[in-house]
Image (cartoon, rainbow, N blue to C red; front, top):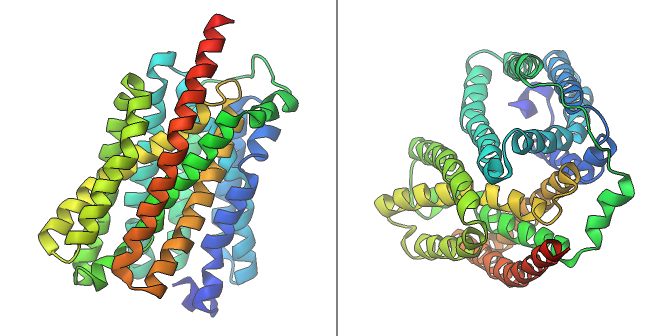
Length: 360
């Protein structure tokens, strides 16, 4: 729709997505660090305000370059808002309930994806692209007002120096966590990026059924997010260790039974639930390695997650072009094996770190 509206090629229109993701990946570790000393509520309102302005400009511009700028500039601030949302949620409850609070934020992310994409597509189809962009602006305005009214003012009680926050990058446990997130996200989104193509080519679904399956995956994601909070609160390390093996089982079923329509619906449901749990696991994996610098750690998580998605999609795409669509699953399995190779040494280092903290 964007390509038609602005008279550009499909690949050029795709810059709206790829440059947004690149901006998030680049700003993930830096922007939350720069804003870490400011009142968190004020920063959240600032970022939402920038998104509202960007959406309004996107709605009314007739120039594609202006549209691109209006989408990419807010992307640099995206990690600031998301990292603060995670931090504020975790800080609003006791330590034992932090994982459950963060899971609620992930529920919001999943619900936004499940509802936002089809609703905005329908608006653009039956009205115009301008009204779809105005829908984004309206949604962000609701978030702005809700933040203004219901989020308490949260000044930074003790500002951490940039050096203190960056020091977490000296730890092996941090880098093992980053590698684990890249591989786990690569495993999930490397395959999921081609789900529609897989359902069309291998399962032989029609496009209406594919739409239902994509919605089912997104709805299952929400269920997975709800489950993840309890799992990580009660059995965090066991949940992380078990996760890649559960995904391996799903991918083996996907590879062996993906051509059968009824089993495939069941596989998509379980896959969606595990995908929701996985998002929470990857956030926990990085932040638990650097609990003293939560905003910076959440920014690093966002960069790692985006890198995993980008690398995973690229590698899994090679299996499609080199062999066939069915073999995209092999790429996901390889990423899961790599994630397992990072999880066990990371668990050992983390336990040692916790023991030294208790002894100290």
